[in-house]
Image (cartoon, rainbow over all chains, first blue to last red; front, side):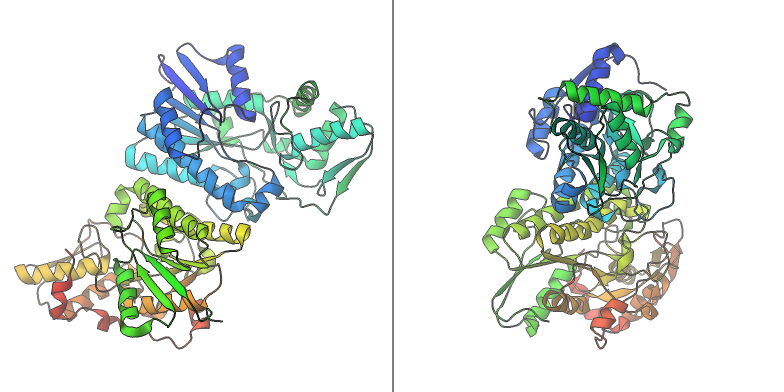
Amino acid sequence: MGEPQGSMRILVTGGSGLVGRALQKVVADGAGLPGEDWVFVSSKDADLTDAAQTKALFEKVRPTHVIHLAAMVGGLFRNIKYNLDFWRKNVHINDNVLHSAFEVGARKVVSCLSTCIFPDKTTYPIDETMIHDGPPHSSNFGYSYAKRMIDVQNRAYFQQHGCTFTAVIPTNVFGPHDNFNIEDGHVLPGLIHKVHLAKSSGSALTVWGTGRPRRQFIYSLDLAQLFMWVLREYNEVDPIILSVGEEDEVSIKEAAEAVVEAMDFHGEVTFDTTKSDGQFKKTASNSKLRTYLPDFRFTPFKQAVKETCAWFTDNYEQARK
Amino acid sequence: MGEPQGSMRILVTGGSGLVGRALQKVVADGAGLPGEDWVFVSSKDADLTDAAQTKALFEKVRPTHVIHLAAMVGGLFRNIKYNLDFWRKNVHINDNVLHSAFEVGARKVVSCLSTCIFPDKTTYPIDETMIHDGPPHSSNFGYSYAKRMIDVQNRAYFQQHGCTFTAVIPTNVFGPHDNFNIEDGHVLPGLIHKVHLAKSSGSALTVWGTGRPRRQFIYSLDLAQLFMWVLREYNEVDPIILSVGEEDEVSIKEAAEAVVEAMDFHGEVTFDTTKSDGQFKKTASNSKLRTYLPDFRFTPFKQGKPRPGQAQHLTP
């Protein structure tokens, strides 16, 4: 059942990030509905680790709905070093956003989890019921527990107050406006930036790790469309995985090859096996999504990679790197 | 290896509670060591859900060590109703205390978990390695996750900064200065208060639930002694269960019988099976403790019951 027609003000935290920008684009391209007022905010508007600033923002905007994307995020190597900061800052952000939303009477909050937070020792594919069934991978336990606790807090708001605060669980997201920093960012934008540099300097592409770990990648523009469906139509408090199917899982080596092809790179490709691989696999089931939306079509991986590479090349100067 | 001789200032949060008062007693009875300065605080001294107040307290006391007992706690029925509050308030308290301790350079923090936070679906006995192996019982998931996250945050302080922030995991604690409120408190003090009222009014004792769930009870004065050992000698970041052995687990019915005997009650004892039982068992292993302290002697369970003259110390 869809949200009632009429006035909805949707506040999107983390509005300037990878997923936030994708949402801005799909809304600007006409995916918003009449009566929907979309408000995108970023760290420029409020420091969400600060309770008072967050409360002031929510009292100013008075949203009826919230898409909560803001978080302290980073790639594998930064997570390994700063587990305390990833835990504390994200807990503060999440508590401030959820509680401010509650206090202004927001009808629905959709937060964003990640498949990297699932138990490390597990069977595959993982699904929505398994989030809390064991400890997460040790590399980013601070981030993982902070994200898991969004689900705990959602259920607590429902148990004590009847609120519909829920969450989505994307797999590896990529697209325009990502963080392309090689040290700090995620694997696909890191590869794109590396190929760009390798082309300019005539050197080899060095992929960190063995190239063997496997991932499901979801294009940010596809994820944005699914977010809007969740906001309007998905009314469970239990979270939902948003991902391509298991059959579309690729290795890091295959992802690197897709980037090399998209950017027409002809140099050597090597693997630095002294660098950590992180989790070997995180294969997630999208059965729950397919039960709701059997006909949703994802952008083919190579096409999405090509579009992202083109965006990076065209926007190199201002891209986050 | 013990803490070095010399100056230690130990701040105890939740100092006026069940375990805090037991610590105060053992320290007053001479269990403190030379060079140890014990500072007990309670909600009168600071609201620990408030970051600024907590920081001010730590900057005033400047502890080298912290025993962190303060929490929002309650019995089964209150937890069931207020999972959000139990989650949020305890996360705030714990974050404020741990981070203030870190910022003033405390060398060690010993926090307090509970066996009720372990996974609901589990094998028995439970041990320290199993805390995060599955969801806790749904009745008090807010409280349970907040306590579990102390262990997560301890490990994060160690990973990022090398701090020795650790935790103990007692089973059901009881003793003087408990919360004897029948609605709000835990099972053993609730039974004591009920027997006291039943005696005064000549009515029956009604035990909530079937009486079949099983628990390991630890006397607060024994726990206090073990806390002091942990503070001085236990240097792992991983937590340690502090409990009597599995062989000393009793049913709620047996606990009620012990109270009835201790208070010389001769009325009828009934069980209200419409009331929730909570978790059926939480049997915990104390093997890790026994590896460190094979000779520690717990006060016998029946001895820990109040003598009739203790009625005036009850907190209603």
